[in-house]
Length: 230
Image 1 (cartoon, rainbow, N blue to C red):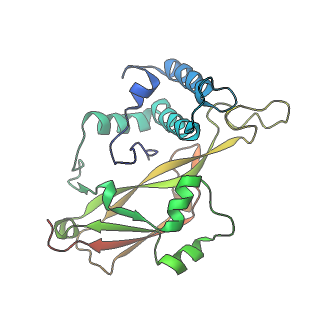
Image 2: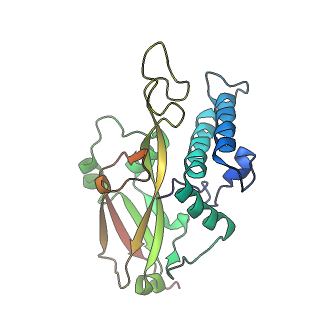
Image 3: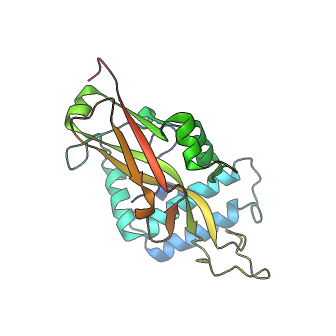
């Protein structure tokens, strides 16, 4: 399952350009480029001082997770080099603009953390669902796919969680052994849904990759059909 590889406008991010690597780059080249970028943009070692260092770090870590994993990279390359509106199974791909997050889940994505004192049941009580997906009548009849970005945590990709001692801190995770990030969840909307459809996902049974797990245990998704649109 791919970490999020789209920007805020729903466009796919070219991580090869960010890492300054060719599409044929090997693991050694990827790791070297990752270390260089981390040193350049981490607040403790950055030579460049900007207000969006945290966003850049998150982008670099997402890119590294994808490029260093053979399976994730294969899927990413397929999407990057063959931009599509329909996947190989014939399902329409829902635009990012038609995926609406609850206010609280939106805050979690920004903070990469569950807000203090806020439990998942509180989200459902206040909003009824975590996410609302808007689909056309055609998509309701035929089925569709949505790719949802969710907050996640992962083992530090630089020290692999080993630098937890006070005197031997990793400058990426600061000795914690893990970092906060985001991951992408594929949600399949079956054919013949209507406005009463809710999709419940048990995220405890899903891991984005071997180093990563979602911050949220359960997800409730509401399907809303856009009338008079095809």
